[in-house]
Amino acid sequence: MARISIDPSRIMTIERHILEEQTYHPEATGVLTNLLYDLALAGKVIASKTTRAGLAEILGRTEDINIQGEQVMKLDRFADLTIFRLNDHTGRVAAMASEENENFLAVPDKYPKGKYILVFDPLDGSSNVDYNVPIGTIFGVYKRISEDGPGTLEDFLQPGHSLVASGYIAYGSSTMFVYTAGHGVHGFTLDSTVGEFLLSHPNIRIPTPPKYFSVNLGYQIYWSKGVRRYTEYLQGHEGGIKGLSLRYIGTFVSDFHRNLLAGGVFYYPADRRDPKKPHGKLRLLYECAPLSFIAEQAGGYASDGRQRILDIQPKSLHQRTPIFVGNRDLVEKVEEFIRENDS
Image 1 (cartoon, rainbow, N blue to C red):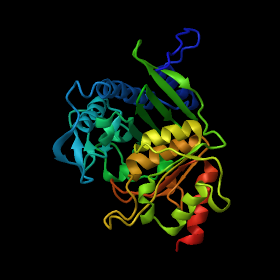
Image 2: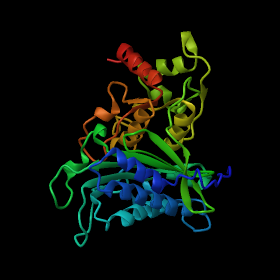
Image 3: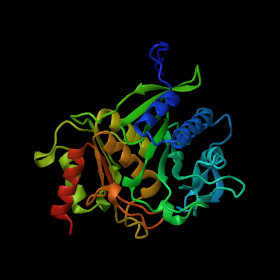
Image 4: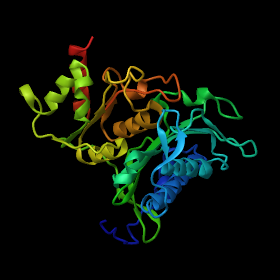
């Protein structure tokens, strides 16, 4: 991992940066600031386990099945509990929802209820842990809709354009915390020598020209005609775009992170493999909306192929959606292919 320069005159910790972001909101009370810092703390704790997962004997699976019908990884359970327990008692959130739980998570009665709603995917790509592949945590923060008291289901079923903040923590050769509170996208790298996230990527913008497209080509026989033609376009066929390379990790947050920094498009379309999943695999609330918010703040765009991801009105906690996210022109191009080829 590249060493981070420790020049005291230039150090910007994540805590300081979040506090300075608060100045954009004169009415702010500091609650959101503290919530974001709590999530950064959760990232440090989870990172400490992901880097020594084998030694800590938390590789592999539990006997539990999550709401998605998937066997729960032991590290998933640890990450899920870590985020919940670092936020359940603070008085900053009214309720939380996690990809790993069928219903939303109520704040225990003995603790105060706050004005924010937290949604998260505790460990995106956890099936890759056994193979030392990068993984991550994704989160989104909404203001509650309901009045004081316990959170309600309605509080969670808000479109992504209502997010007040979102971000992700990428665990790999280094640990990065990337977030937006509606004023640009900023990335912080964890310096393990001081135990703090330091600003390493200020004001991230998705670069042009793009370098990569990221998709599992093994599933293309199940895609619609429009998506297949779009894939051919990305590969340079019949007047298509030139110079893009295929890069696919298989962890949404990791593929997204690379394309955010290098330029490109990630997509996971709907397919015909499973009639129970006609809308793709990825979850709107926990994965797609938070990362789409980041993409747009970085100058990009995210779509389900027909409409903006951030405009989709959720109907359930675990709703799935197709997604195409990255450079705006690349995503708008797939909307064009789908309009012309798919009824």
